[in-house]
Length: 310
Ligand code: MN
Ligand code: MN
Image (spheres, rainbow, N blue to C red):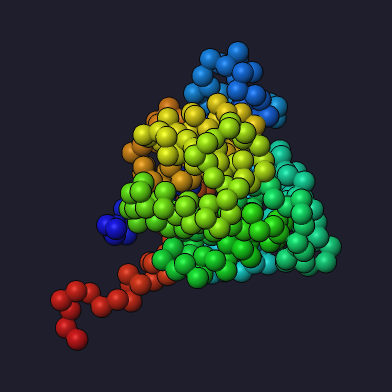
């Protein structure tokens, strides 16, 4: 695997976070629609136009991006892993009356507010995609350290979602993000999905049936189907959001993965121009502080330089 230098990794991390926001903003328009309803209204939905069931302004993002920003903000402010700091950001966000919030997230945040509970107990109904949709900052922070990813991905998930399918999905996508950020090819990414499907066969996606709901299995099948059957960022995201269902969240997850994989130059200019400028600015301010906390970045600064005197 070709290891990229610092500026190339920062650029891919930026593409991943912007990709997440673009997928959220693009997919919010078609959230909860069926593919045939989308076809009747748009032929193909390919522009950031807002609207949707939340009646959004074009370029406005939803909970997927907002909760991801909460995690990134907490990491940057605490300069490290601080679960209560992440939970406090979620509380502040919820108090600000977000435009959308999933019921499982709301319950987990409320339990933290009332009891200081940082790990929600196992729940059969927690196999939604709410922990996965906000995973990206945790993947950036743990870059270069798989055991750290395993611990942090599950801890951040269990703030609100405690289910083995959600945990497995978070770990798989975290590993794919780690690989893509340092320049892995699509074969390496596909191999990581096979580790998941070997362990949890429900996630198999080679016979994709078109279900794109908020169940984390359907969410990942949709994301993987389009990630591996398309050849660029835009085509991948257009495929995902035209599948409808939980389109903002499949869009956000696909956007993060495809952004990390294809890089900044692949993000469509016409979409970036529409993105809420406050979101773009906050993302730009958080990428470097979060990546610089990662074991990957710390190794860059502590390894002796090649050829240096010993
Ligand atoms: Mn959303
Ligand atoms: Mn959603």
